[in-house]
Length: 103
Image (tube, rainbow, N blue to C red):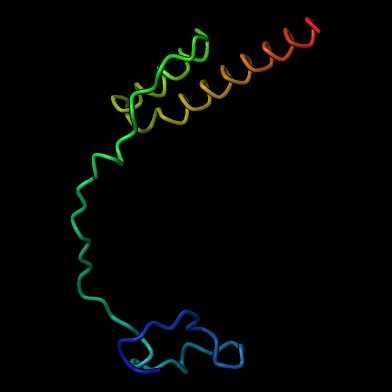
C-alpha cells in the first residue's frame, strides 16, 4: 500500500490472515492533520412541514409532543419518544377493538 491511501483492514494481509502490528510500517498508516467539514445550509425543502390535525385527539396530542421536541433538551427525547409510542399503540389498539366490536 502507498502512503496517503486508507487500508480498510489494516490488521489483515491480502490473504486475509492477521498481521502483527510489528509488521506494519509507517507507510501503511494514513495520518490526517485536520478534518474539514463543509458548512451545510439546510434547504427550505428539507424542513419538515407542520403536521396537520388527524381528527383524533389522542394522535394529535402525541404529534404535538413530537413537535415540541425542538424546544426540549435532547436528553429528554427518548422519554418523549417512548411516551408517544405508548400513546399511539394504545390508540391503535383501541381503534382495532372498536372495529372488531362493531363488526
